[in-house]
Length: 210
Image (cartoon, rainbow, N blue to C red; front, side):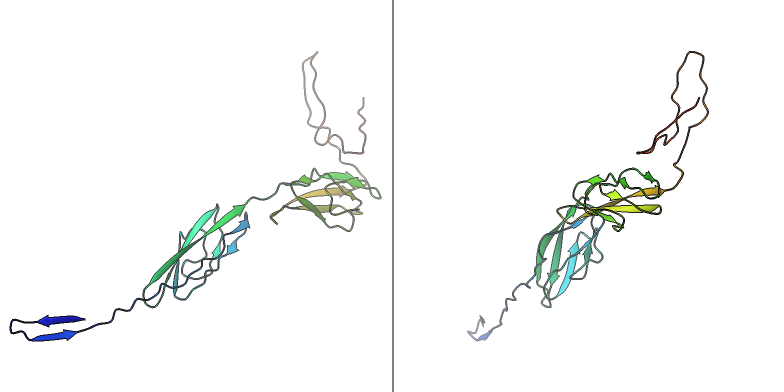
């Protein structure tokens, strides 16, 4: 309230009301993570206009639930403006999890009717497909007995649920591959190594003549 008195001792008063509006309720959500090469959806809650920063790796910056796919760990700040132009801010950190190592081994050769052991390795839990011609699809080194040439895919899943894949081909053929290498020449008295790639397949023997 304000009271004004002039030189004649006349006075008048007036009053006004100041309303204090509460800040809008805002929650950026829990810190989260995703596997490298993937993405994760953010989910802020509140009523008003949303604004995210930085915009790097976000599908949009003016919605409550953008999809985040940053190349490295990033802390995002979200600002909420309500109808009274009051603002609140909150943050959420998105971590990027590395992928496990996966190696399905070298390509292999197999005579029809026989089997061969795959030689996979990696840092996590293995799983092979197709599984029908394997004695155990959930070990690193199953026995494979395909009737036709088959490409096997090894998937490694780590403790974070991240996955990586690699493939190996088992060539089923009556004729094993042979490669004697390129023609070579040496001076008298020198030595050289013969053989192309491959010169031997596991489980086979090699005979040179003369």
